[in-house]
Length: 276
Ligand SMILES: C[S@@+](CC[C@H](N)C(=O)[O-])C[C@H]1O[C@@H](n2cnc3c(N)ncnc32)[C@H](O)[C@@H]1O
Image 1: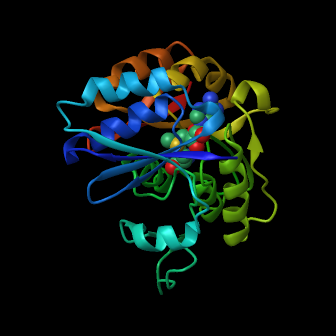
Image 2 (image 1 turned 90 degrees about the vertical axis):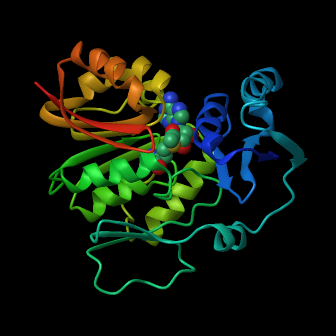
């Protein structure tokens, strides 16, 4: 698949919102740079009007300048070596790439070679989901990770002792990358699938449902999540802002999902619900 690259220089305080808005119009990979962000989208998904509407909205306030290009063939490991440092979640989780040295004595080490996929733990939503997972008993549980990206949350579930794991994403780059990451973490029995929850139509119910996507998708799919979570099972959500919590909570309540825990970071939010 051919990718388009947009080198966007912008004020620091607008980076998160631009990433979120560009993700809404199909961009699926971002690198934070000294000047702003590099954003990537598959050429066949690119909608210039939708992209331009996002840029126009912030161009003045965020002092945006854009350089557009086609993606030259890139060695993603080299790129990530420049941009990606390991990250710790408390003193329990250490997320690193295979080119970083292992950390001795850490309880859960996750190896992610992110290539073009979202999910290294650096984004607040991934960080919040991982932190929530540490407080949920995964031992022997059936878990599904919807919008899996690099597969990082599914891998966390595996490290926390989940017995059966399903994971999928709508982006075939993520599926390839996720499957590589599963192998890197010795998760040989799990294969990431391609599609939305309705397309994949998983069978049976799950103890834990993980979905870090975006507000619109979460609201649209909430009814399905409601049927997927077992009674007393958990639904962990992220991909939305603190000010969206009330909409997410109201939608979840319609399907028997009660809010149990809330975490926020850099204006992003993540919630745990329990099924009645
Ligand atoms: C915010 S990223 C989260 C990735 C990873 N789970 C994490 O926590 O870092 C959202 C992912 O959801 C995928 N996605 C977007 N809409 C989706 C949908 N309707 N169904 C499944 N995946 C979707 C995107 O391709 C992207 O990889």
